[in-house]
Image (cartoon, rainbow, N blue to C red; front, side):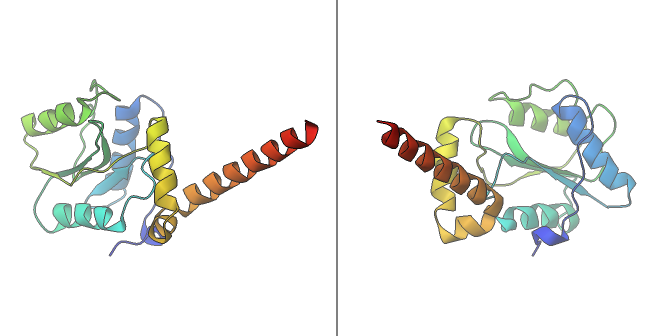
Length: 169
């Protein structure tokens, strides 16, 4: 399987979301990778199997592109074997139709597109509650240790503030 320590990470370039993703993907492809997978940072707890499945679809099953749709109509993962300039330009970002419009664009340009199962990302307060529930489990804590550490620290700070407020009364 694919482990986090084995995955290269690069800083995103300037521009809108499409330009940022294109830049990251081309950076990997220009560096000699046969395919590049770009993931959103707002999907902590993403199972390792999601990345492994994307890699297999690109490298073993003959797909040109893999998209990982999210429940809100976007996607948390895109993997490509080629990425010409403008491929992801002028798409409706952060909209309920982002995944649909991206898929249509890719298919119109002749890409053989594979789709993973839906996942979720953290955009709203309800999503944060879901993340808190995930990292409260032992599996979730392993999948999103940095998110767990931040949430634990915030909870601790909240408790300290409440205690201080009670002492002042």
